[in-house]
Amino acid sequence: MKVRTYTDAGTFLRNTRAELESNEAANSLMLGVCERLARHPERVKAAPCLKTVKGQHGLVLAAMMTPPHRLVVYGHQGDIAGGARILVQDLVGEGWKTLGYWGQARPQKKWRKRGARSPDGDMALSSG
Image (cartoon, rainbow, N blue to C red; front, side, top):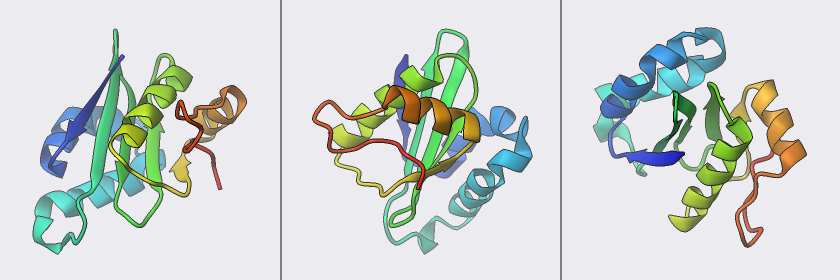
């Protein structure tokens, strides 16, 4: 699996829109925020965190954070818990801090059960 970081919301949406819209009710927050970021980047005070984790069969996770708000995560398919671990390692490696995340019940349950944590234990994805 591989993490990709996006510097603008338009590119992020071009690469995730179909998957996010496949479950629009669950992903309306991420879609709405990214649409606004794409249309009005000048309104953003702090750079957003926009990432995907892709596996052999396409999108595994999409993640978005607009500090100081929580990370928003969508688990699409495949090894979601493994994707969460890779995502956490990438976030920690880049110095991102989050107090928690918003996401679907299925990934939250898996992540808590399997413990998606950074190698040093400083960050974990947990609902809260």
